[in-house]
Amino acid sequence: MDHILSGIKPTGQLTLGNYIGAIRNFVKVQKEGDTFLFVADLHALTLPIEPETLKNNSRDLVAFYLAAGLDPKTATIFLQSDVPDHSELAIILQNYLYMGELSRMTQFKDKSSKMKEEAIGLGLFAYPVLMAADIVIYDSKRIPVGEDQVQHVELARDLVKRFNNRYGDILIMPKAEMVKVGARIMSLSDPTKKMSKSDPKGDIYLKDDIKVIRKKIMSAVTDMLAKVHYDPVNQPGISNLMTILSSLTGKSFDEIEKEFDGKGYGDFKRAVADVVCEEISKLQARYNEIINSGLVDEVLAEGAKKASVIASATLKRVQKAIGLYHK
Ligand code: ATP
Ligand code: MG
Image 1: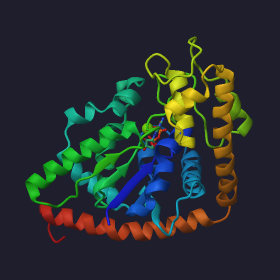
Image 2: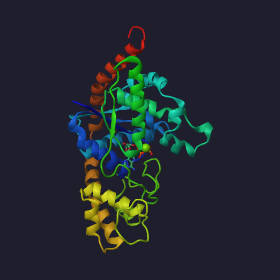
Image 3: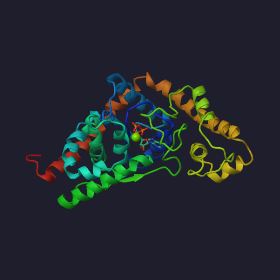
Image 4: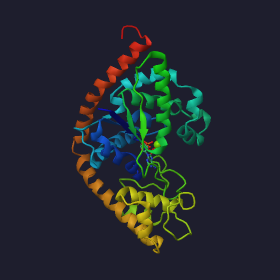
């Protein structure tokens, strides 16, 4: 069975983008292989975060994984920091990725562009090294991610090629895969920017009050063209709302265009709000049952045990291959 792996950083409250582009897809693919889903808590340290916030976000993330339908009997759910082998492997793999390629990563450029050079942490720069370790340590072949993470998976592929050329067939080649619709949900207030949990502008949060969600959708930025039409260049706001509607209902863009032909943006937005609010209400109800039940801790303890078995075997294989003595 192929190994499937993905993770989310507990940097902030989960967004509708995380749900549509990542979590819902995890639920869909979990039975298609041996699935490993982790909370990327070490990655969350790449930008300043309060200890209590990091802890609470991590808990929340697991509760939302479960609320969305991830089954801990099927998928191994764990904290990245509970399996220290990731970090050990990253220390080794950092020697096979280069400054030039790391500095070309869009995420690094985006996140560091607003910072003074003296304040840019090494961790932010080296993020793709740890991510490559996260991937290869589980012999992962399939990496379901949103569009913005594809570049990092491509870099992990370069690393695997480089490493295997030198040492033989040691690492498994991973491949990114995205949802067909919704791999890049945009901000509702600036539909030219990706919705991101660390940037609150125009986000819909899975924990938002349902009334607030409706309000955010009703006031989403659109255009003056008065036509529900899929055209991300000229109508980015409307196209983004169509993407959200399409991904949650399975309706095609054509069907949506026909349905709202001759109708105003108010009607269209109300329809999007109805669908999103219904989906998130159900999710919140299950989240509320889970968050204080003790299930999160149980799942994480079990997950760390299962993940460690595979991680330590891969780490040993790598250590042996590169000549670390007595491994
Ligand atoms: P941050 O701002 O901290 O980078 P984020 O919202 O981008 O937060 P990540 O933890 O970086 O979230 O990514 C988790 C997963 O969600 C990844 O697979 C990523 O590609 C996906 N994802 C993030 N934002 C979106 C989005 N707007 N649309 C679709 N998928 C997304
Ligand atoms: Mg991100």
